[in-house]
Amino acid sequence: MKEAKFTVRVVGSFDLKEGNINFKAANIVKAMEGCPMRDIVAALRSMDQTNSPASTPNPSRWITQFAGLESEAAGKAMEPWIQIVNDGQIVQDKRLFRELLNL
Image (cartoon, rainbow, N blue to C red):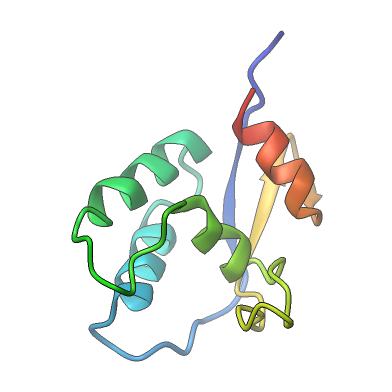
């Protein structure tokens, strides 16, 4: 099976508290706009080796959170400032994103 070619596109600005782990993750994602998704996730994973209480067990969740795909019920919903793009199409489903990431 062919590996999906997908990335992120910055479409807005983020409003996160400077210095916290989410702010650092957002800056990584922003700086890696257009890079292959696997590389972006790898960079987030390497940054998230702090074992702090705020770290996330799955760094790819930052991407879905920043794209506005996380649930309000989980307390993670935010105004999207990136789009997940696969072959020119915007991915708007968290499950599809995870399927593409695992190809």
